[in-house]
Amino acid sequence: MAKISKAVFDTGPFIHLYEIESLNVLKLFKSIFIADEVFNELKKANLHNKISKIKSVKLLQLSPKHKDMSKLLVEKHNIGLAESSSISLTLQEKADVFITDDLDARTAAKNLNLEVHGTVGVILRAFRESVIQKDEAIAKIKELHEKSSLYITKDLVEWTINQIKEYRK
Image (cartoon, rainbow, N blue to C red; front, side):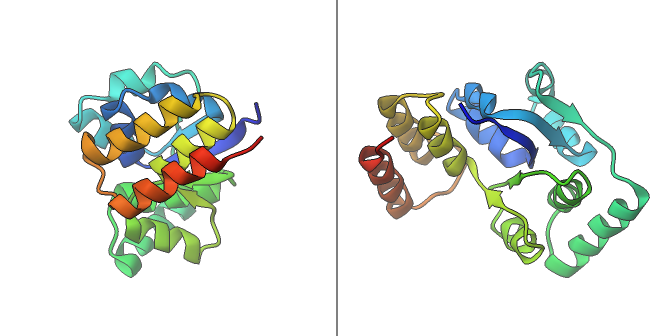
């Protein structure tokens, strides 16, 4: 299995994976970095204890330079502090990928040439890396649409399920 060395997570994907009982897919990542603001949002969602127990998750501080960048991102892209701090942390740590489900944060990160994926992408990758099997991947994509707080279109659900069904190793 090809683990991703360094990823920075925003709050949403943790919540959405928890809602569909799929935190096990976080095995994909050797190191998951989170900013203080994400940790605070996880506290509000009563998930901080559960997420903190995952060995790969590390709370990191932003350097003064990256804190300033985070504030600038909030103003320039009209995104939340957790999202902007996560983008800044991705840059600071030279992480391989930024994981968020926030559309504005995705756009801001892509403008900075960062690789960005969301919860759907994490589940798809977990399937491709054999962390979960085909039937479970399909079920989890359906659950994201039906049971989680993540808004995804029926078209995206159908497209993702087709990707899973057509995938050949």
